[in-house]
Picture 1 (cartoon, rainbow, N blue to C red):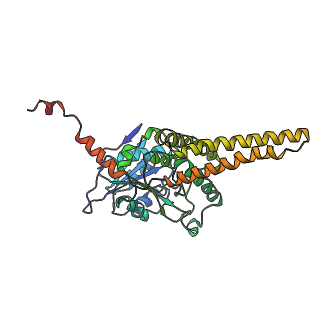
Picture 2 (cartoon, one colour; picture 1 turned 30 degrees about the horizontal axis):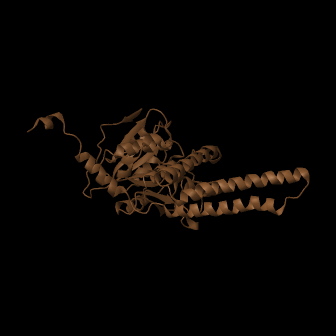
Picture 3 (cartoon, helix red, strand yellow; picture 1 turned 90 degrees about the vertical axis):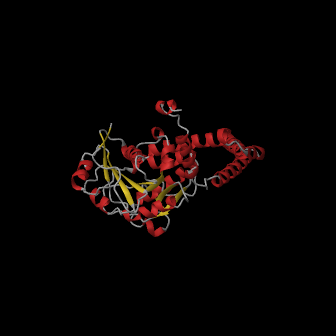
Length: 353
């Protein structure tokens, strides 16, 4: 159950006509949240703080201590995870005129001064979704714990494969911005609620053919608390990426866009798997009998492996080239406008001559 405080205005007056809303998931951030809100500049018109059943009652703390008229407090009766809190904030942001919605964590690890930098590619019409990238330069990651650095490197490759965004890095970075047109097209009930949220959202954005860009930013770790346990997240992330990879490849290359690359993918997988299995079986047989494998046997195993690898590399090259390049929010906005204009007239309008 989600509770929205109706006594707080949904839009604060501003001469600059702000186009940005900020969503802040709040869980155990009572010590940092007020400072985060205070750092948000006038370019933002709406600040939506989502209390995700926080044991510190961060939402009530913001309501009592913060006088910023832009702030809207939303509360969950039950904890839904960072993804669930963000999706609740997205739904609330769609009730405002904001064109871009930025997600900003409440733990102080993200600099609110970078809000406009994150949102700028979307406001300029160059992208549909933007996210921070702490690995754009080597120096940016200075201060990041070694375990997180290694984990992010591994997760980056898995996310590239499962989402189809091969030029995107730092997939777990929660400093993101999204166009409202994309929010209206997402199916929130299908998006992961917990820490897999950012990676899973990239998969769903690829299905919409959205353009995603990385925005350089420095890592900031200065003793802020984190409830993420990297070792505990290995299994959920592996299973989530495996599921999304199969879904994306199956839909994109077998249903939506069958092509030569689809043939390369199928044949390459079969040849590589078959050659490897035959090679292992022959190697085991030679070990049992003590008779060396013949040149023909070696070739029967090696040739399918080589050809299969070449086909899979060719498919991967095609997949990289198919990354979305043209923003879709303009087209989606036109479709939404047409749908609103085509809505059937109400009973009173139908009776008019």
